[in-house]
Image 1 (cartoon, rainbow, N blue to C red):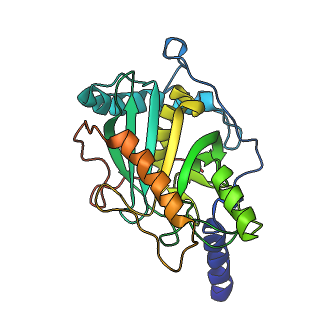
Image 2: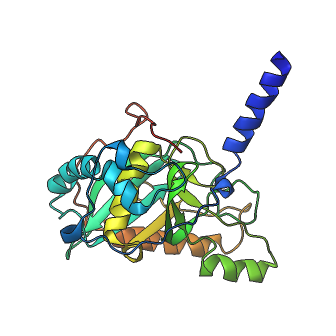
Length: 276
């Protein structure tokens, strides 16, 4: 009996760590901008919310909208950026395990806050194929919002993008992998696991700003600290990729104006809660 329980526990853990491909069968929802003037009713009693697996983006707003607005509003006010903003950029740095939230109205981008990345597998270098456990590196956009993720909430990025596909063809590679998400919880292979509290903020803000107004840049480390450099183990075109990433990050951060917020650190981790 003890061996059977141990086997079941091991199986559950393996499924949880199988990466982002184990998203639920329910449809992923691509949302338009949520108008601040036509906001969803938020934070209503759980009696009004559907069963797990049947949520919509509107249900996420009803459950968490007010609390997210109260929390993020503080950071936006300190950064002198309207909430919600016109445009936002998510800069993810694998080595530092940090995701920075930048936003702007009509001026320059300003740093709103940062989040601790709770899990991101692999090493420095781009994702090359299915099953390599690598988090992609490059310049991406959000394509879909999934309110019914096994990882609480999730946002899908457009990996492989045009750069990935072009260089895979040049290399003669196929089966590049797919289904790369920014999601909740604290376990993942190939995705960015942010914890439930953080993904609620990012999910709701992205829905408000609109997926077409959000860019995601993923780098091996923060080039503001020291330059990105390729190595002999990486593809020859990695230096081209790193030049593009560095240029994009420079365009966002060149005139740094921040909220000087503590964000999420390893000493101040978000508490995971809610269904998945």
